[in-house]
Length: 196
Image 1 (cartoon, rainbow, N blue to C red):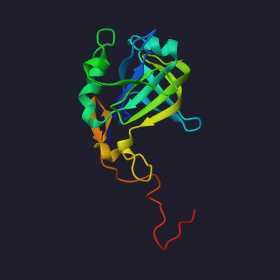
Image 2: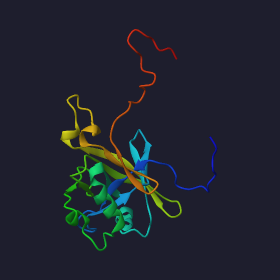
Image 3: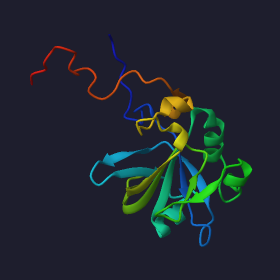
């Protein structure tokens, strides 16, 4: 297999396409910003980062309120997620125009999106200036899960929702069918023993 060498760029894919909820409905209006530069950065305590350009409408609310929500959308919500990333909250009420329900978090004032199956409530611990984007590193202080996506054993089952949204190289994708679980490649089979 031959390779072509490109300049360094943001080719990591897929990445989540999420809606970050900002504001508090008082000092800053509730708003949504589409984020693809997001990811878990620590397990204990559970922490996440999102990266936002300083010129974005939500930036000031993020800096001053130091909290946000991360709302993981269904693949069927791709058009809404895209629209929320294209238009500015300065000119649009994104919740109202897309018929989304803003619900205050249990531990943050920032709004979460009721129609998303999974919502992470986050409090900013650190802001790192990187270049085109500033990274907001935050602790996940609460998680809300839509009951219809929890199976009988209490496990989150995202296959029930028809897949969640992912972003890769300028395109949206449906992360639908589960093809394995962590550790399935070395799981002990009946009658066998795994030695490390």
